[in-house]
Image (cartoon, rainbow, N blue to C red):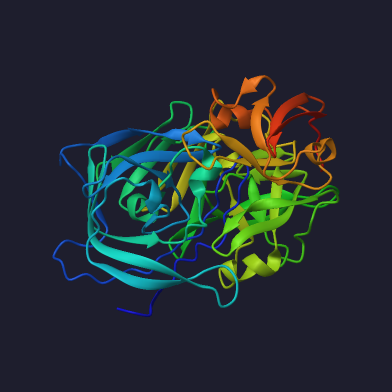
Length: 427
């Protein structure tokens, strides 16, 4: 049906450690099939729970699944999305999709309309779990490339449809999720050191209350989306509350990619963020262009999102039916927040293959002052050969302490260039 609209709202993609913060809420599609749409069920009806291993890349949980007749695909587990979204068809070898129709997506910015497709009646296979009669949105834009920012082929996003039917426990230390049958799930005993964080749904998104603090000011209650798909500690909109402002020290930098292209904004540290009775000092906060993101949260009475840089400090029981997160400190709890201090963002044009280049350089950063330029090919970082080491291993060299030396061998216009600089915080 030509000209049909699907409101996806995939408007803001925030990369910290090359993570992604996504907002997505595809409107439900009526289906005439007898099976309820977007249903998941255990393959064995006697099963109490299934365990699925995940890969943690830059704070993001990536799980394996299959769709219809596909090979194994890799999807980001994201509390910010409702129905399943395929973001990159070009990395999928074989896939049959049912009942396709062309739709239009309103993307980031006024008047931007992008083409997409909607497919109904699909089957999704996870370990021990099958999803029946699913609606899947397929983005067609070749400019939207999560995989290049993550270093491996990542095919899409999955969220609300899975969470709404189960109780899901995330074990960051063991790198697995346990999916419980909610009818038989006996709520885990809430330990004394656990936090029970209640939330309300806003368009299938879980919104909870936390506190933030600027130096010399009182604690401020803020309502944030609890967003597994965001890798920053948090992002905030300065237009959402009169007390939310930029920190005294901040840097204008590349934040990520939206459907309309690159998004720039500001990053800086605030004094603290508090979740329940736990306080985390000096979190790095992203402040995207408020004019750009305010339409995203208008009418939701929220100030931004709480991301995985904070959430991964806990093992999490996500109870959508009970509308609460149960957070228990894990081995990440006492580790300081890590962030890229080089000013360099890198990409791989061939995800999964060891070939890397510089995508952006923040003006005034250590790398900028050392002469690193956009589009430089990265041959070595601190002796790590780009042809032998993974994207994560190369990128990790930028996340050290202030004063740590970084030596790079670059290739520019066929010429090899050596540069060196010391990591430094710009805020």
